Length: 276
Image (cartoon, rainbow, N blue to C red; front, side, top):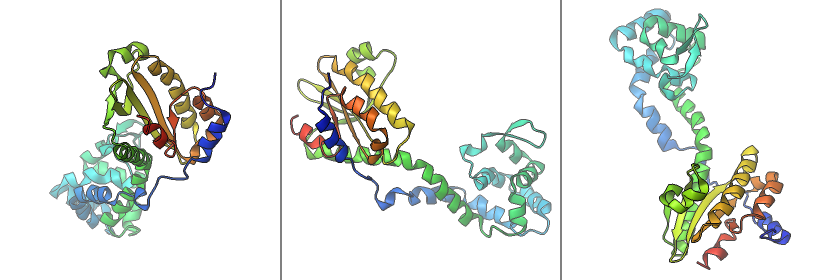
């Protein structure tokens, strides 16, 4: 039997917010600047390669003075992991990327095979510090999904504080043996825990401004875990989710909505918290 009415679900859908992003969401320039600062000296050294009439000679000069400068070459092709990524060399053998940085010959092979040699010789890059700042800005966009989650967590933390509800964050289910009994080996980390005199509320929070298969997976997962937690005396599962991305997974969300008693968005959560 559904724990909510169709009318309640339609109201839930109508309340979903378009976004939770301010303009400072898109780029973390403080982190970007620090990443560049950490390797700036090496980049300044490598700037001498730009426009060199004899790239091999310029590489040898740097190698004889400071071979460690080449350890940052991987970021020039937007690869992190400190060069630990496996790639194929010219003989089609898998090697770790930073193995190219162990000799001047390896450096030359790296520059030529990646296309950086052409960019350097033709001065299509004029300053490696500025170039890497651009790369770091591009790579930082990969962190936006995590930032969106952190924003949602911050919003919920503010809401809980507003309602004078003490809470803990990132708490594992293994803290309670009763939960381990129903969840088995599948240890769960909850975003928030609110402990009242007679009941402990375990919160999951997320925000989806866009669609995707993950939404179906999340809804299915919480539909499975919520009844297990709610079956343990003194515990209740609470899911706070928002974002118009759910409109692309409306059917799966409705299935979860009909199973999970405590499912709220950023609008409806206030009514629930007022009862605690």
